[in-house]
Image (cartoon, rainbow, N blue to C red; front, side):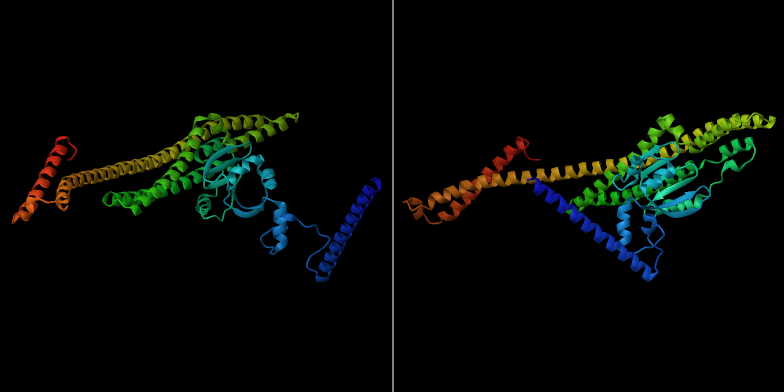
Length: 426
């Protein structure tokens, strides 16, 4: 038994050595081939992100992309309006904006058409319906900027930026005035995102209203299977659109109700406070102070306090404006849904009326069949070959048929009168 196990281990080690020799031989042949072609420098270290760039075509780039994992195309806008395309993976994004990895989930396709605004220490993660972005105090990163739905947002950023920073003003009083005049960079990006989302939702609601009223009016005139299918698809589209509007509206309402969340959205203020704290700690390490330094620090702290208050009010006013716009959009959708419900009730009343008419017609036909079944019974009785003196009477056939018809009409009108007396017929 021991010899058998030793033989198995030895053979496995021999197999691994053979494999290692094959791999070394393939690497050596690959290096020799690259030296012969002089296409690249062997001593240079290959960067996986550079190999996975869209300029490299072939199977090698796709394999390296799979190894890297999470490499996506991003567009970067700074506060001067300059843009550039970048290829970054998850680790590079996390190190760049200092956010946890779980925050990148809401930027993926799994949670599409959801609305979340996550505030972190140095960045804000936006997921407003179809717009997804990571906003800092100095730049904004957009994933998948070539998407058709994201292109209007990119165009608005190019038009409304560059951002005129109030920090460029030298004196402390001017900083406070600049903060009151100009919104911070992250607020401007948030405003542009909300504007694009609200405009898109308004246009969708307007188009839905136009189609809805046309289809519903046609349904009231002609209740058909085709029109009912149109109404069903219209209701499903309205439900999805109402859910999208409701998600964005609820997220803004949640931010307005939470003062702490509202304060964390002011990334520029947090950056200034951090820089002021670093400057204060640096100044404490110096023994001598000038008379102008204390005056500038006091003016700067006062301007920061004034800017903080004005920044909170500006952000609150901004969110309230778009909250009201989304609320109006939601009310339009609710009015369309009420119109659909009223049309369905009207169509249901029409169908019930037609059903009642059919029931009355069926009742009338049933009474007529009962009335003339008596005539059939009499005719069947006389059709049997039995001796009867009426067979020998001349001209009795016409009188007999007229009598049967009269008796049938009499029974029918009696049943009809009874049904009207019982209010079974209108």
